[in-house]
Amino acid sequence: MPKKKRPSEQQIFKKFQTITDATNPKPKIARNCARAFIVGGAICTIGQVLQELLTKYGFPEDEVKMLLPIIMVFLGALLTGVGIYDKIASYGGAGTVVPITGFSNAIVAPAIEFKQEGFVFGVAAKMFTIAGPVLVYGIGSSVIIGIIYYFIQLLF
Image 1 (tube, rainbow, N blue to C red):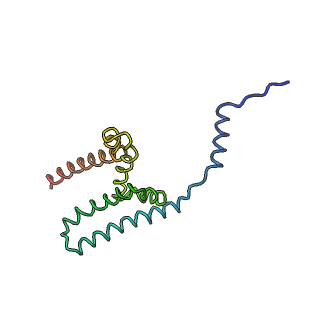
Image 2: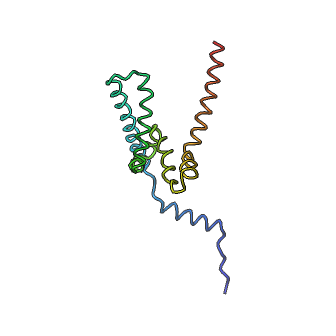
């Protein structure tokens, strides 16, 4: 009786890849983009409404520029702490990442997740695991842009 030839690893991988591609659900890109637009826009609209309210109640423009990010970061942290921000993010996807509340969520979520490990090795150590690189590159790029701006100002 002839011996059956065993398929190669490459053939097995190709067959696995074909089955995987056939069974994976196709992403609904248009729907996800629309949801991100709506949720991100809603967050920004809330920020704009808060800005208008602060201005209406007599806060100077400089104070409004300081208070509004503080309020939005607080709201993002609060909604993350009570579990609402995750539900909004599961619906709106990337729409929750871009606004300042996404930054707040990126700091608070790991802190909550690792609170069982204690304040030093849990909350403090893990708080900036997601937001840390954003801060490093954001601050680094702002320093570089500031230096470039400084030299441009010297030339003109």
